[in-house]
Length: 132
Image (cartoon, rainbow, N blue to C red):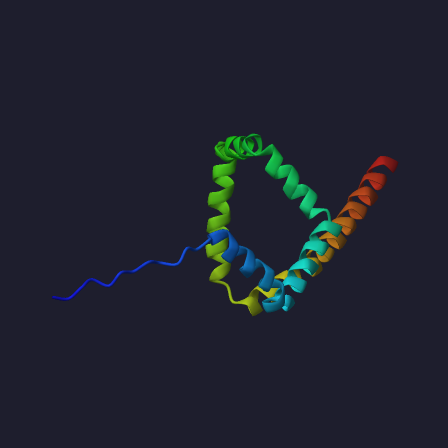
């Protein structure tokens, strides 16, 4: 009769394996680590890391405040309006929107010039009437 083969698994220490992986990671991922360090340095220089640390320490207080503000009728209307505006803008061809945006300053300048002319005309008329 056949005898069972005795199997004894090798003892593994997950911590040692993780330490080995960690020790080899800088060599295997040197370029990625350098890029990550540059990103972290940029975030630090701009104060973004400090903001994030503050947000983390504020934790629940910050979240509660945001939720309270988001529950207001004004915030709900704003979100709905933004969604509607995004749908509207997605239906407009970019070239047409560009023409409209570029024409706004011209239209404002024309309206301003007309208002100035109308005001001068009104003042002149008032002076003439006052002299009589």
